[in-house]
Amino acid sequence: MSTKPIYVTQPVLPPLEQFIPYLEQIWENKILTNNGPFHKELERSLCERLGVEHLALFANGTLALVTALQALRITGEVITTPFSFVATAHSLLWNGIKPVFVDIDPKTLNLDPMRIEAAITPHTTAILPVHVYGNPCDVEAIQRIADDYNLKVIYDAAHAFGVQCHCGSVLSHGDLSILSFHATKVFNTFEGGAIICPDAKTKQHIDHLKNFGFVSETCVVASGINGKMNEMQAALGLLQLKHIDQAIERRRVIDTRYREALRGVPGLRCVERSGQTVDNHAYFPILVDPDYPLSRDALYEKLRDQGIHGRRYFYPLISAYPMYRGMLSARPDNLPIAEEVAQRVICLPIYPALSDEDVDRIIDIIKG
Ligand SMILES: *Cc1c(COP(=O)(O)O)cnc(C)c1O
Image (cartoon, rainbow, N blue to C red):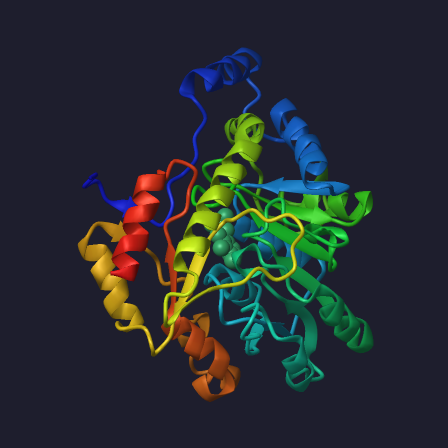
């Protein structure tokens, strides 16, 4: 029995010797950043892998979110979910935009389209939903509302690398989607991110914004930012892509092992997939109901005492943090489902290097 602590995830890294030739090339050509050869190649390769037409790489997912909002000139109020990582709403505050929190659907745990309309005001300019755990939002319902009220839609797709639904890549919905390649995500470049763009013109504009607004040596067209991915990150991304299918396949096997073993455990529910045809198994969330012998926090602590560090994603809700909780839409009585789910959820460890024995040990602790 291993006594090493097990965390909710462990970053995937390729064999180090495979990375050396990429570094030698960078040392040789002295191009470290600014849309270098690895950067260009990774943009092309990711478009192909993800089944999208245009993509702009970023230094991280949060800068991609902040820049996406700038690119579409979003102002005023934006409807978003409280059940996400703080970067979703923080990107709005950084742009001086007011987040308006809307409750989630109890099944998909994503922004509930039925509740969006009631939150629209004359100041609303966009909707910022999240494909939580890689589970696709109800993209058609959201688009209908956006069309009716002339709103933009930006998807925080940080969890949705490679996810497909019945109409292809989940990343091709809305006006823009953003990805994160952070160390803890399914596909990592240490840190990194991207904006999926609908056309070449939008990508070009975003490429200007991520490089201080430069369009040429002497011409600056916008108060852009430095959001560029560097050549080391891009080189690593190219190498990671060679191993990604294998990594997701191992995640799938672990997902199935948990799901089969935990099915029928009284008081436990595994969060169901929400209609994706290709999944990435980024997370394994379970919900601890009152008829389970322990409370959610008691189970979380029991696991932790045995070296298993699950995470209560997403608890607390974003709306509960001090910079949001004064807002009317952040009141708990406005968000009953999200409040409830945040009290019940634990994400169990899932990553390619997690062994079957460790999965079984986690299952035994939960069942025991
Ligand atoms: C990870 C994450 C981000 C932020 O991405 P970074 O690359 O860490 O900046 C944004 N939104 C969600 C939902 C995330 O999980």
